Length: 160
Image (tube, rainbow, N blue to C red):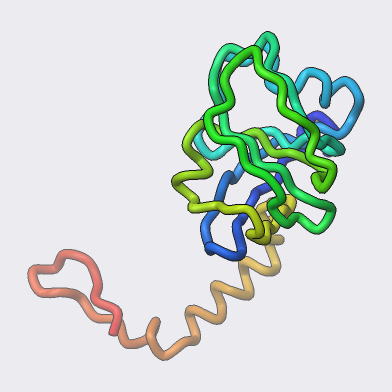
């Protein structure tokens, strides 16, 4: 996976809610500098995780967004809702990184200072042919598969 294609999901473990499913990781000097510059909006359930960072600027931005500041253990140490263009945040020296999210994400997820976040890379598991064949064989030999019968009217099957 190239550095450019890295994405993570952000889950609020304290509130049991997702903040975003497709957050780009900005951890190089260039990607941190660019951030959301040039973008017209953030897609729902997306964002940018800037590592390391303890403050941001929105000079040159074209839209408002929410900002979550987290420490090295992914605990929320600061929140800024509806960051408008052409603003600068004061540094939060407890923050190790920041997550830029679509506007109203903080409100919708009920995220508060002190909440514990989980940030992990999401990869769909690719099944091999042998795994697929094994699952199919297990299903075929299960009691549920062998007790199916045709529904009334001849439309489909009922699995009991």
